[in-house]
Length: 454
Image (tube, rainbow, N blue to C red; front, side, top):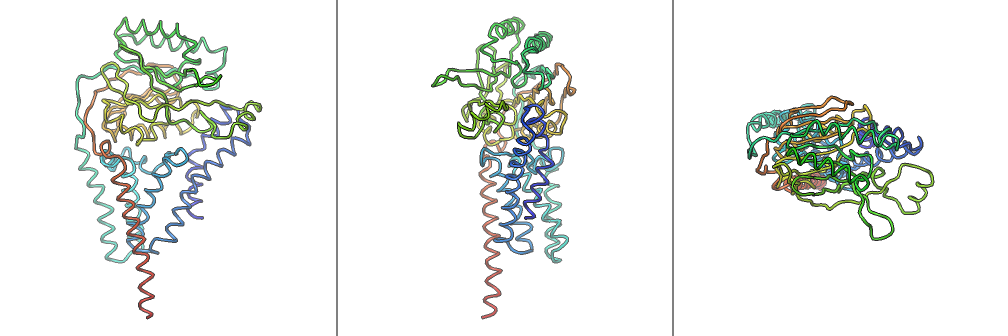
């Protein structure tokens, strides 16, 4: 129960902004918005409950094997499961808290999971210092201090190297409020805003729009897009545009994709793979979907893109692309990131208003930069547009809620840090081994009193 309540507090406070998107902008009834929020919080809290059960049932009651071995490893494994089970929700993982700390230097080695484990190891060391024996406290002190010293030393290691000259980038932040964006009366105004801001940037090698920037299907605005592409091509600019598009489906209804259009020497698309449950698709039976339509609730079903898509080659860069909260799934980006020279994330955090969600999402993007040791181009409609350096540093940031063009430079980088090469597997195996050893120690604890009584 303690683990469950911890999860309720963590995710209740950390994802309160879902109410803003579901009720405030999605216009769902209060009861439905609160129900969906409660369901998500309860599901996430169950992971803490499982951890508590595992600790009580199979881990030693106290001591180093519990505090420094079993609990950190089990927590790390459950964080990993939470990142993919039932489509996954890796938000609020512990490692993201270290983007500005020395421990972030471990991210290129083992990704955010390794950073989480080291942080948990430190928490276990603090408990051991308080409750452990003199010998255990000496070990705990070393465990508490050495990882931080190691992180400081790792900061100086260059896991990647620059390749070629810097590429100038212009991020077009439209800052269109979500409650106004899809109104038919505002369609032409929004298109004009993005056109005018884009025309101001012509001559910049790469111009980037945020997620679903145009308030209409790309299919319906082909002349508009062609005019912009011709103007960009005439000034040696390439366009990377977040758009929604339709393709013919197997039946009568078309298939809709949340996509990125890369327009340079040729035209290429990236289609979003990790869709948002209840936002971009409803994981419910068809009769429930029909009921939702009758109730006039926010409903849309997008089609998922391929799980593995190559980087987008544009303006001399090879960009590993992600849309919205896809960048919270680092494992699915490993193949693309290895082949890339930079990362790009287009998003629309306007769904969450002035809440902390946009800052949480920015922190996730910064961790992706640290793990891959590459620049990240982050284009947001009304969130936080930014250019992030290979160490997670903020090189340029647009003002919030303001139509603006953010300019900066991106240096292409090549090379694969250990995390890009091997992914999560080595550290998951390590965590599984630690958990197994802690369970064995619990069994030995039970066997010793029984043997002594004989």
